[in-house]
Amino acid sequence: MVGWGEVELLIPGSHSLKDKRQVLSSMMQRIRKHFNVSLCEVERQDSWQHSRLEAAWVGTSQTAVEETFAALLRTFEGEPSIQVLSSTYEVL
Image (cartoon, rainbow, N blue to C red; front, side):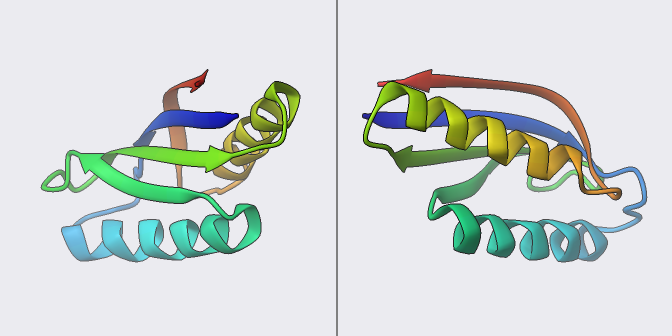
């Protein structure tokens, strides 16, 4: 099974694109390493405080795919410098 998800983020402490990229880069590296997902910023690259990320991953079952997205979301929500505005996922 393949999972696809997107997360809309707010980075309220960011005052420049450099600040935003430092926060996102660190977070994305940790997520890629820990969860083995493909992750990319797909919108709002020029916004200092907003971002939309999309992720894709493979799991052995629908439950595994759903659990991976739930863990990804908990990771984002646990980051004090990031606020999750919305999220969605699909199992393909």
